[in-house]
Structure formats: structure tokens, C-alpha cells
Amino acid sequence: MEDEILNKTLVHIDSSSVDFQGDDKWVFNVNLLEPLRDVVYIMILKTEVTLIKTNDVFKINYNELGKNTYGLDSYPIHVHLNDFKRHSCVVSKFASDTLTLGSDLVIKIKDLVYNSGTNDDFNNDDFQFLVTKTLTIATFAANNPTVYTVRDLKNAIDEIENFVITDVNDKIKNTIDAFTKFYDTVVQNESEKHIAKYFEHIPVNINSTLTTTQDILTFGNQIFATFDRNNQNVHVLNPIEPNLQRLNFELRDKYDNPIDKNNISQFNMTLCFYQNSRKISRG
Image (cartoon, rainbow, N blue to C red; front, side, top):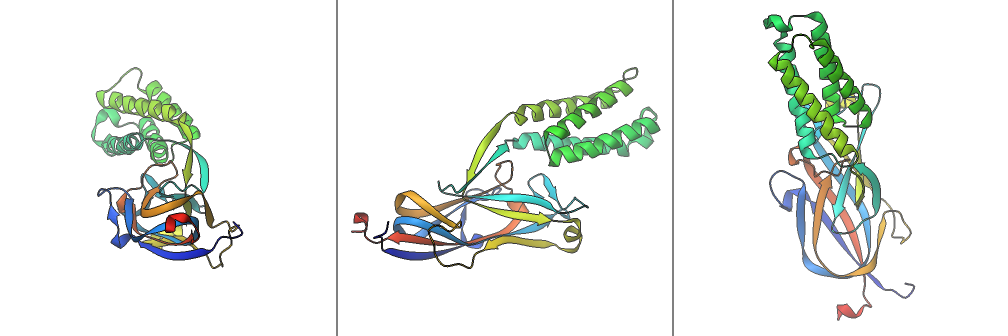
């Protein structure tokens, strides 16, 4: 497009003044004051999210951040904008009910551990050790459902089953059943790999020090550069967008699930839209 004449329009998105599609997820839209005709390029100037603590932890859905005491927990937030796709990655689609089951399971095991001293059936050091170990695995599994975790989870199930084989209590049965169901569900979802395509990503890097000293954290990208169609922050529209009237946004986690609204307090993005003024559709 050597002969193109470009007009540019700067658009700043502030989540405090957008229309959300529901009350629980980061899905929203922005209606432009005037349609943008014949958009050929979109340049990303700024992308920013602010995380807030929920129950004294930073979370992205069921993933607690900053638990890695040996370094940073890196967690990408994927920004979806209309049908514009600049990036792609392979993800395993873990359904929200799988993660909910893992979270509920952790609560059940905690209750089992806390009640062990008040019930003779559970007043056994070996069993207490097994339950504590399983609780640790379950907590990690709920936050990081991976193949490695699935193997550990299965081992925990086997150990508990072997321990209680001669004297199975209803409470222990329920725990085993819950673990087995969680294991089966995670294994099933592990095979559901797909390509996730999105417009932009925000790297979130948190260490354990930040989780104890901060109540809010802001992460993002800001670009200080002049326009160049070959710049990695410039998205080329092919075909061009003849009449852009609304921006539809969605923030998703690394498993390609929409992010809960209570994990993020604010989202900001600044975009520059370049329009070809010579196109016939502008007449």
C-alpha cells in the first residue's frame, strides 16, 4: 500500500466506563462515538491490568499467584478484541467445573484433617500424614491441573485406598470417590488441547514477597515508538475493516477461560487506529 494516505484515531479504553456483559466475568464492549471507516492497521500503545487480593491472595480464577518461593510465578492474561488475532498458543481446556471440583475437594480434605483428632477412626499418625500429603497435592492440582499433577493425584488415591482397605469409613469413601472423580475429569480435559488465538497478552509476574507486602499490583505493556507497519505492536487488517463501530473485549486466563471480575479491579488499553482515506467506502 505505497499510495495509501492514513488518518489516525486514538482510542483509550478504561474499564470504569464500559458496558459489561454480565456481573461475573471480564467480558465487555465499547461503542465508538463515530464509526471508524476502512481501518488498515491497529497499533497497541498501552495495555494494563490491576490485580486485587481476594481473601488475602492474588488469584486468576482458581490459580493462586505468588506461591513460588524460589522465583516468579509467571501467568499470561490473554486480551481478546473482536476477531482480531495477533498471537496464538496451545492450551489445555480445563472446564470451570473441574477447577470448582478441585477447590471443593481441598475444603473437604481440610475438614477431614481438622476433625482427625476428635474421631478415633482418624486418630492415627500414618493416616494423618497421608491426608496432609494428599491435601498438599490437591491444593496444587486445583491451581495447576497438569499431567504431572494427575499422576501424583492418582498415587494419593492409591495410597489412601491401600491404607483403609480393611476398615473403610463412609467419610473416607466419600473422599476417595471425590478424588477419583476429580482425577477422571482432569484426565479427560487434558486431551482437549486446542489453539487459542488472541489479540494481546499481558505477562503477570508475581513473587511471594509481593503477595505479602502489596494489596494491589499493576502489570502491563507501554510502547514508545512511531508508527511502522512492520512493528510487532502493529496489527495489519487483511481484509481491511470497512466500518468499525464497536470494540468487544474479553480477558481470558492461560487455560482460555474467561477471568472472574473479582480478580482484576481495572483494565486500561490505548489503541491507535489507522484508516485509509482513499477507500471508496469513505464516500
